Image (cartoon, rainbow, N blue to C red; front, top):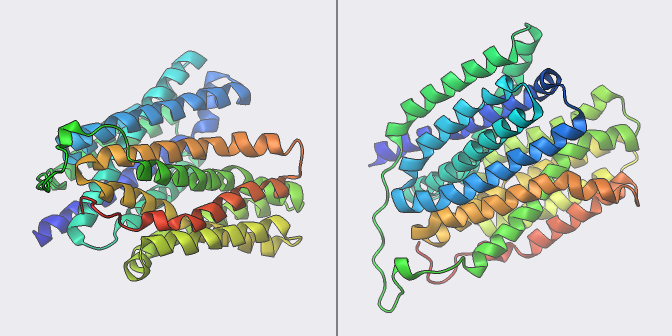
Length: 388
């Protein structure tokens, strides 16, 4: 059993890394695809909403399917769809075909996101200790590898079609090779006397919606760093473009490092404490970045912001998955789906605020969200009567 669990954990690492790599390769090739199709930045922005909409739809479908048939049955086809769909944007010749391609790519990404997180919860349950955060670290590593590989391909003049086709084929191979190592569905736990049968359950528990609300706030904070950290240094502190880029680099590096280290911390102090202290550290870091008149202190602030946020979302996904073993996929889909909407909302929320207040002062909205999450971290304590 221990060997089976170990191979399942390695397979889960493979799927998280694959997901990060596939989506990272798309991000690297966005300018190339935009130029090929001949659309403006504004049109591209609207089309990217289809990517988000497809992802949200895929998340809501994959969760219940994973509950019904087991994550093992959903993860491989989701990974295959996500990988195969990567080539579609490179083949698009018009705005509407690019929109359709992004819708399919987003749908595959959403299906894979929820199903692999649901399987990660199952692996974590088998280990009996926190292992979720490292999986999210693998996703981040996949994105870093994609940035390096994509930059190399572009520097050599390789076409987007050839590069993304190669990644699609490689992704299909990884999905096929890793699939047999995934864990089979868990047997349903015995129902205690007086407990309603699983088939009679209706709706999503309020605790799950509360976790989803925290995910929305914290992933909005992550989206703010993705979209506004470099602009903050360039426009507020007048940093050169190369220096401004270090803000996101510092944030992303801290996020990845923190995710790889958080499982040990969560095992010692518990997931609620990880979110409480992590969100508080993130609030402190972003406050320092927003108020700093010096570039080095601002970079330190973005680093602390990334380090603080790094372990929060994995704990929320884990808590949702462990709340009810029979509805793990559906619960993860609620938390992941609302969190994903939060990440997409980051630019939409901060941008309009800058018409009324300076960019650095607009950052106090995500600071408030981090403080709220720190105060509500007790929601991650196991609830009486949960499946675990």
